[in-house]
Amino acid sequence: MCGIIGYIGDKKASDILISGLSHLEYRGYDSSGVALMHSNNIDVYKAQGKLINLIEVLKTKQEICEKSNIGIGHIRWATHGLPTTTNAHPHTCNCKSLTLVHNGIIENYQELKEELIKTGCIFQSQTDTEVAAHLIAYEYGKTNNLLKAMQNAVKKIKGAFAFCAIHKNEPNKIVVAKRNAPLIIGVGENENFVASDIPAIIEYTKKAIYLSDYQVGVVQKNNIEIYDDLGNLIPNKVEYLPFEAVAISKMGYKHFMLKEIHEQSDVVRNVLSGKLISPLENIKLDECKLSQEKIKNITRVQIIACGTSLHAGMVGKYIIEKFAQIPVDVEPSSEYIYRDTIADENTLVIGISQSGETADTITAIKQVKEQNSHIAIITNRTDSTMARLADSLLPISAGIEVSVAATKSYMAQLISLYLLAIYLMENKNIQAHKEEVINLKQELIQLPNKLESLLENTDDIRRIAKKYSSYKDFIFIARGINFPSALEGALKLKEISYINATGYGAGELKHGPIAMLDENMPVLAILNTGIVYDKVLSNCEEARARQAKLIGVTNYIAPKDKDLFDDLIMIPSVSDLMSPAMNIVVLQLLAYYIAEYLGKDVDQPRNLAKSVTVE
Ligand code: F6R
Figure 1 (tube, rainbow, N blue to C red):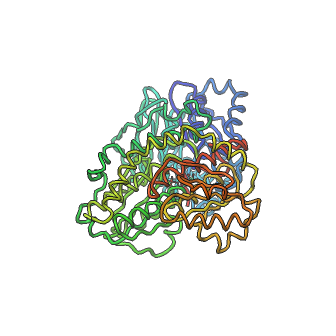
Figure 2 (cartoon, rainbow, N blue to C red; figure 1 turned 90 degrees about the horizontal axis):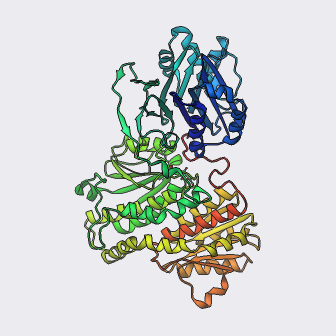
Figure 3 (tube, rainbow, N blue to C red; figure 1 turned 135 degrees about the vertical axis):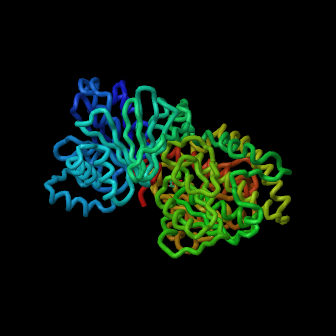
């Protein structure tokens, strides 16, 4: 949520800042700004709306841009105050000496603001960030040292932050600090970078220092110093960044979302690689640090996640309960943290998060960690805060996901959960369902090819998307293991097309939502051959009787039932257990093509951000 970039070196800072912000646009995009240092002056330029507006502003300031080799930049997702130019970062102190960008939320900003007003500070914006600018400047007044001013200021601040500050009296440095918000320092040759996420700097360097909570750093052109919470200088720990620059290109696709949907067969291959060798061999999951004895003692599993990751967890519940025979609760992290949850050393807690930075999930995991439960984290970011809290870290290795709407990371989470469920079962030596598991493993191995065949011809889905794109509401229904697919399909549609879509367990339709049905409310039903097929079909009849338009997504339909549907999308033959991984691709594509047809901003839908770092 929000993006930070900083540069110090010999190159034109504005170019690097804009390029960095363009790769962070998925984190927030309602306003942006840069501060450029040149010969002991700092110029700040900001714009409301998309980054392109800031680019236009900078085009008129080329003389300054040419002169500046040091700068900081920010792209905002508004929390405090409207997304206006005034509220955009960077923020400055009253004498304009100090300028700063910030990610996170300062919880005690009101209190600090009142104290600062008493010292004569005049506030321009409605943001919490401006408080930090005035506070650090106030501390600078006492110390004449930007490092010390930052160290003193962060001690007074409550909440989450990543700060990046420059001061015109110290024109050769950027000072950074962080707590509960990610910040990395990119290490270059005669230049260094600061960023809130890897994509911003990966085209310039593959080496970085991950700043830890409570640390403060001083970044210069040829030197980086990191200080711990006590103010001691500590050795720099340089790590190699896990991404290639090519991963953040669209590779000819119109949108990242479409590219990422098409990457899903390879994503499945990656997740399975080295873990599922053949249907007759046990799953190898070295990342799971639970001993066999510990696994046998697990009495319950709690899955904690948000949004799309939560839906993956709901599929995980079906598989884990069925095969590992352990009761599973799945709960949104934002609810988990506000009650007295019951967990102990025999509880396996699974946190699922693409970004590994979702604030609610981090809080929930920290909370349950105190109860000595084993924490397994399923994430796409092994460098994230959540990854660092894991007892067992299960990377999904989906490659960087740029589109705000999660697609391939969902697929990778699903497959990781299938592997984990079978691994738990095999380590508990459970014999029930053995044959079914051998078949499931066979299907997992075949899944990438089946996904490829589904993705080869999407004409039907495009046609249906166009046909239904003018409807204002949708209902998605399914039962059993595909109930989460209905929720996820509806979420995808509303996220990127802004069409009101709701997912229901098909059996729930008649308990209320059926009142909504008429010819203006299309119903999309997922019905796979399996124990709930006939039941979902009956629910479709109920919808049809209310004149709702019916779209079926299925691997089989009896000729006599075909006429029930206005449109049918057929998926390759697959078992009920494996079908969530196929059905979801259809629903992702349907949402994508509807949004694309409506001309929506598919990769950066309004009001959303890729990484939700506020509770
Ligand atoms: C939907 C989407 C969100 C995220 C949710 C959790 O497309 O991306 O619903 O799934 O914000 O994010 P992570 O998985 O990063 O914890």
